[in-house]
Image (cartoon, rainbow, N blue to C red; front, side, top):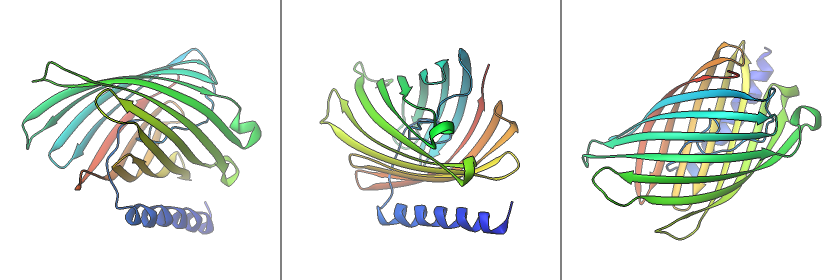
Length: 240
């Protein structure tokens, strides 16, 4: 890859980090891997296939382990499930979360150079020492743009979430990714959901192209005036 290509990616990532710092970064949940909040509007290559993703995550004293199976009905339609177990060593609290998400992409980004879609999710979270769970529903509208002749993408989305014990929270997310070497992709992400802010920068490497991938990212989030830094290590199996 030409040096100029690395410079372009470096500028994009530097701009993302600068914006992240200006927004006084904060937390996030899970999403279209390798992103945590940002939804993408890129159609799948196959239909009637499964994928499985799992990742371990740490923010300060909080540890989490997630497992996410997804079924692709068609290149435009998918259903995704997520199960997460977390523990806070500082507060000595443990809990779990479950989420189901339906996503539909309206057009083919490989043909049009851009894509857009809709994502609807239902989730529930409960601490193990509580008899009550927090349930929420969410809706997002993702938009993706193909860059660098298909070697990278820029993703945006806007959405709204409503938990049963809180007011509606508006959200915005942005993510950028580009292949910089053989089977290696750099990515960065910024997100804001209500009072929560989140940012990450990382790398994904395909052990087997479009089949098996590992990723690592450094993350920072802030909520309720508290900031936490951490990292994520993930693995994904696709087109099963």
